[in-house]
Length: 167
Image (cartoon, rainbow, N blue to C red; front, side):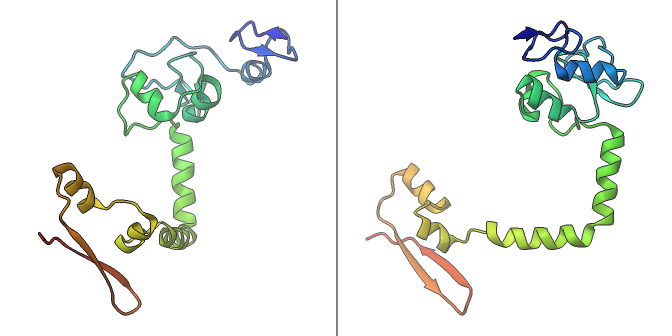
């Protein structure tokens, strides 16, 4: 095992004293920038986002932080006090993704509709799965145990009608 002289990661193979990741980053002209202050997203001169941990810049900082530093985007944003809605992708990548959506909108729309059907959970399904619905949760918290559930099916759509009765 060899320790990378740039990042300190252990590697089985040495690329001029660096790990493979560092070797290719610097071979492509990568630079280690000054670490950005917490709460700010800083862009380098190529439009890439600079990492708050290692100072390197990437088009997709979220992927880098996950694979290299083991942080999800949400954890990274919390750790460095970044706005939850701020993007960790460069403008070039965001523009490319936006164009892909515009160019393939009909396919995306169809897939969302089809995929959405599988994710819909009606009240009847929740009862079958043994998952509590909102009414059950509220009554359990209040300590109400005297209530019944009536399930009625109409047509082909299944509807669940809940009624509270005090016995």
